[in-house]
Image (cartoon, rainbow, N blue to C red; front, side):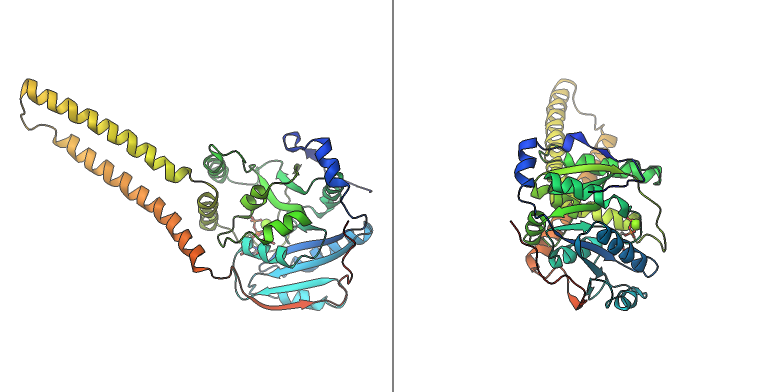
Length: 349
Ligand code: UDP
Ligand code: MG
């Protein structure tokens, strides 16, 4: 396959699987795969058509049968109208969600719709360079079930955001066997086995980067640059990222819960030691009612620790509540499929 790469890519060696493992996966790959391109779109009227066009041209150049799946995540602008305008010429499926559910759910809906032997997940705003897709597919042919982009740097982000991200991944992966790599992006390729696995993961609180990682299979990270957004502005602000971080932590880590057992243990031990000290001191020197500041500090400190730990319990319980309600993760208001969609599923081996 021809790969004209305008940008240097750097394969991360720590993720590579053994040659035997790769070979065993590669021999099952269909020679003429159907590729599903999955695009979550929220207010992307400026980007969606150029992106669909770019992907269609790219896939045609590569001689790959493909479908373009756009999940409209409750856009308030002309995104849907734009997609409808190319229904007759491009192999597009439009899944319109009943409201804005957020990117993780939009991706979930897109994965559920994908018919392909493999899927390409890509943002609509050209921050993920589409010209890298051939290199990703090449690795898929070598036997990798998931190929994902890793940011080559985070220079476009503020210092504070970088610190928070680093702390988040540190906490998330603390003591975990299956670590979620830092700086990965939603720009990735998923083989059918991953799509099927993700489709049967029932949770409603979906932190996709955690789910991709949890399911396993052979995977490879590729360092890529991130381009600036072409049109419009990012939908994520500090608070939406904080919410996503809380979902990720509560879904994939029990460290915040366990932490309080340790803190509680240390404080209890210290207070017992202090009590013993006070008893001995009183017996030896008598009690002249000192220690008022110590009392206030002890009470306020413990009050703070208790409130904080109750708050953390609340985060988990809130999410357990969402899961037990068993609501569907999203509702679809309509699905429109183009006549240009490839009809026959490929012959899977
Ligand atoms: N997106 C979405 N639902 C949302 C927010 C974003 O489907 O609620 C889509 C958006 O259209 C884009 C991708 O997710 O294709 C990434 O969003 P954005 O560029 O706003 O995020 P950033 O690149 O800043 O992380
Ligand atoms: Mg973006």
